[in-house]
Length: 239
Length: 277
Image 1: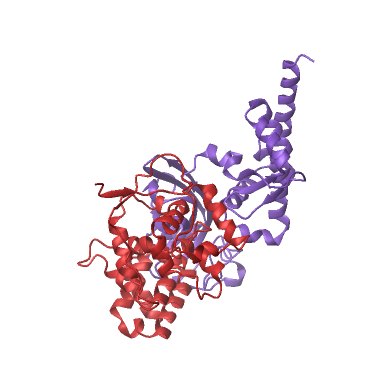
Image 2: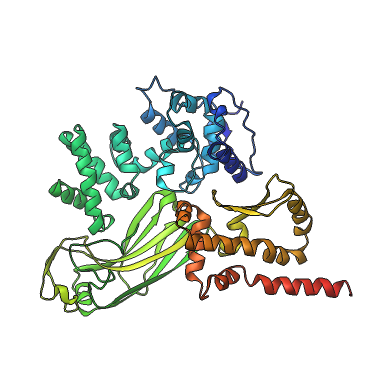
């Protein structure tokens, strides 16, 4: 029995077609069904991307327990053959969200009861533009990118920063959906400040102030030019 | 990220007319399967800033930013004409911005410059490490795309049938590539001709050329085009239009398509000769 499965990718044309069906024609019915009949339109050739055959994402429990942290770490550790270029390919993530992890997607990002189902679908099931907001909003790609951007082999717990990042949804959004989150030093400095200063991380007003301050600081300084410690010192000075 | 429209708390060379002088930068990129090598060249003409470099109070920096792979790193350029920076090719995908700065590498208690705009004459400014003191502009590079691929029409356009039997063709901009929708009858004719090399230039001049010209006019004159600026086709065309030496849009579009009318006429002349009319 095979112990790993090779992942597939949709063709570019099919991804465009699927997205248009939702955005232009408003066809959202398949997203309400347990087994939609997506076609397996995949290009010829191999992807050389693998997951263990028995790999499963943990299903969320209601709207309160998402298991994002557990899923982020397990997907990041188990997917083989991926790098940043491949991880920014909408064809891979669209296939995974529509075919391989469909049950998980339906549970984590259901369209039932959502005010704007088209918005939810385009946000979570597709990656319309190649930019950081899309990478960290897509239902599956976000899991890989969260762990990838915060995993640090030099720490006792290499996912220490991932845990801080995913401790509150607003912290995740505040760091990852802004350009400041794309630089490792800034990202690390922010997460360390949150970890070392519970008086900031536990109060919404305080961490919002922190993000605003870093944004303002980044407007005049070239923050990626500074070390993590230098960024932390400057940020602490102004908040 | 835009830098040239920011307001800094101190004068910055390269931002409006804050400081008189020149800070010009350029770079070349060499790409292999595994490595991408950036070779920047910077030129600074401002005596007081040059002095900051010479006394290790400021550094030339190059920032590489790729939104598609969340990559944003700054490299210090120690040699203005001979530095090279190598990064793994897998770290970049698609549009990559390259910005150049001169940054304070130390805290500077009083920064003065004889070439400040008269508004700041005799003023001194306190600078901290990391403060931007000159901006050298932005360059674009498309990672993981061969130059031929960027030049090819297929990088920016698809041709499909519209599902209507007859009628004029039209552009659909909402997608990673522009889609030209031909009527079913036209699409069938197009498909029967496109496999013949001699007809490719004719297709370019009769379908692709007007479609691209319409696109460029849309981008230039219609504010609503900005909703598509995150698509790759938009970025590629924008860069090619901006880089093209042509003086009118009509000229630029012809240059992008490598003079389609000329190629089409030559091709038709060839068909005419071969048929011995």
